[in-house]
Length: 109
Image (tube, rainbow, N blue to C red; front, side):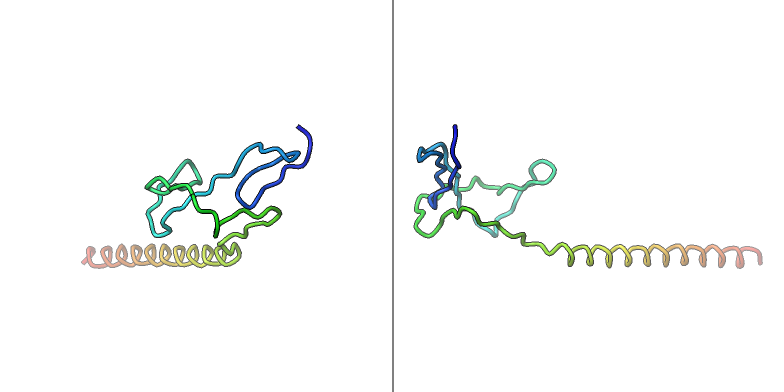
């Protein structure tokens, strides 16, 4: 097949003005629970329903969907959590050491 594939607003995929496939559009409740799928995917707990009225929903060719995650912010938060964990672990080691010293001191009397 030759020609550039094009996506229509209704989700149709055309090549050389012939329909070669379509993109499935589905509705789901955003507040619904999701289930892990594989290593990095999630799926709704209930099967989503196909969109039947595409008047307000569509596909736009040539647009890039942006991530809903700010990687710099999330990396900063990860570093903060890691540092807090390290500080807590150091405090726990220090407390254990103090307890050991107290037991040795009191035990020798």
